[in-house]
Image (cartoon, rainbow, N blue to C red; front, side, top):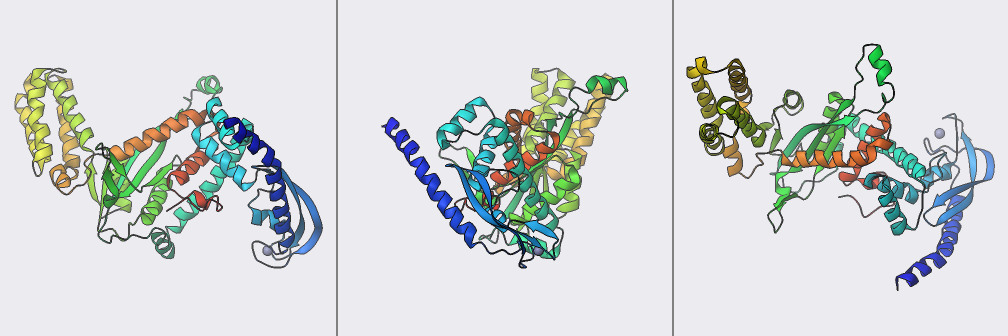
Length: 434
Ligand SMILES: [Zn+2]
């Protein structure tokens, strides 16, 4: 039967193409010759100019009028704008969408084959790449416009109204982290740079966040934690840009109506500076597993890696974090107790001890794990860590085909897709989104 399905698909393809062409021409002929920007009547420059577009059923052509807007000082094809066509690209909106989805899955030969099987379209890799990049740049413009909006009072109200919050008592959780992306611009120039005494910069931070409401968290039948609705932010354009984007996304996810805001992250200082700046009233928590890792490496340093002594020393400290109110104070007390045997320690051990005393003093107010667990809050930043590794995996597949500026466009495209706002790019996709 599969053969029959394919045969019918082939035979009706031309009929579908013709139907599309007819409808497209009808709509083009009915399009008023008004400026899409200022709505003024255009001066006619030409009637019935032909355009060919690559649609999901093959090439279609149509004729449309061309005009000049005196107030805007611009030539334009109103039909092309209304149809969602790029001035110079041949892809129809549906082909634009398919190319973008294809690129999100990764440009491997396997994906290309699957894409052809599922859509019946064979787009060459450079078309997919170019079109997806264009869609990424559109996603970037949408994202940047929202970040700008979030800096004005009326914009804040508008974003806050985008995602209606039914539960007025909700708590909002923000998790933040960063990962590395490899630069490609300097490839082939490394030797020249080194000769000039410059080390080529190869890695760039991608600042990443995920945002969700506590009442959106659930567990599957097998006990795996899932989050029904989440917001995402990812950019490699620096902390300032990240801060604006994070704020805009938090507004969309119910920041202004949250009863409580909780930020969970590792100990990186830039994160906590950002939180103080943008989310002053938020409760702060350092990821429990990072903190325990600090205690374990100190125990290994002081008593030898994996020794019985190391375990015996660290166990009550780990338990204090889990089980006691202000457990961090017990830990600090325990660490300071080691100063009494300081003359038995090597220089490295002393440095490690003082470093960790400093670490726990810096973060002690971010370690209320017992209280957090009692009221069902996350004590770890697992949600953002899995987000980062998903982005990284995708980038390993896709990254090598994108330029440096393309990286940011691709991040914007992937993030818009994850945020469930695909219809902002492709209004024909009415089933997507919240
Ligand atoms: Zn105009």
